Image 1: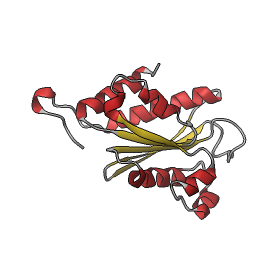
Image 2: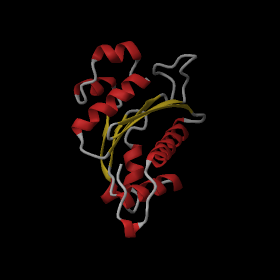
Image 3: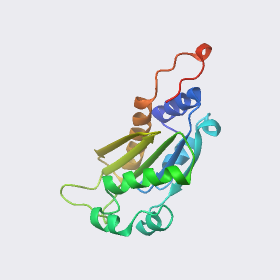
Amino acid sequence: MPSQIVNECSKALAERGLSVAFAESATAGRLAAEFSLCEESGKVLKGGLVCYDALLKQTILHVPADMIKRFTPESAEVTQELAQRLQTFMPADIHLAVTGLTCPGGSETEEKPVGTIFLHIYFKEKSIAIREVFEGEAEEIVLQAIDRAAQAILAELPVHAGKADGAASL
């Protein structure tokens, strides 16, 4: 069952006639799955691409290998590139990418510990980068990242003027 914030986000997107697409690494499809469980999913969710392995980031979304090597697969730079390239791959009003470290064994460092999540959102021409460090087990980190993604989308949506005035647009 999706969290309250995911349900609110899905409803707000549907009220505004907006759609969303995801490129997921750290959340491994869970973000799209949570949105798919919302009542408005058919109006809102365009789809998602799981590119957990760095090679898929390169071969499917064509993130340059040198960029992944330079910044690591779990980085703000690669996350932005995923969100940007998703726009040509999957039509939607909002494109969101997520990478990060939910468990040991990735590119964690003292500056980028396990629990670090990178989100990047494109709302048409607007670009939003988010870096958070969450605590907990892997699933808890994933669920916190999903809620943060929904919160970030909601924060950027225009105020809805009401159904009598028609849907607001970005």
